[in-house]
Length: 189
Image (cartoon, rainbow, N blue to C red; front, top):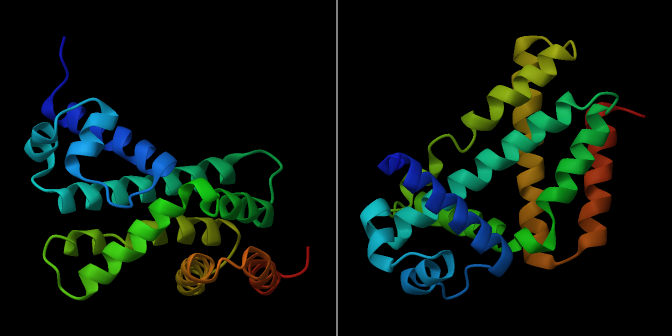
């Protein structure tokens, strides 16, 4: 039984995310991306409307995957919150994912300038992350207001350090800053 259009669209986004993770996005065209994932550029236009709309879906899917990874790490028996944060950080800063991170910041910048095709990338940019982060904070005993504040602080710090890493390439400096943040955020281990 063939899948629905929604299933096919999801398969194409997943393939595009995997391709971008492995090869980056520099000068990617719909023709080249389509050929790389086994479809025509016309099919990509059919499912996404434009290259920009496909890029937005790539970012959204990448973000969803990262939230799922965080949820999996938090459920791992015996894994402390600090160690879960470190493992997520190492996944986020995998050099193979630098293209996805650059795309994330590029589309956010375009959306903030009001470029209509990029604006949807802002939907859920913070709120989708806050829900699981706030839940983790409240499970650790934080009151709801503090949990929300801590979650937003953590999210903003990690995104800022990701941007720092992309801009400077200073892996040692950024990793040291993350460790300092974790000491401030979680206290001494």
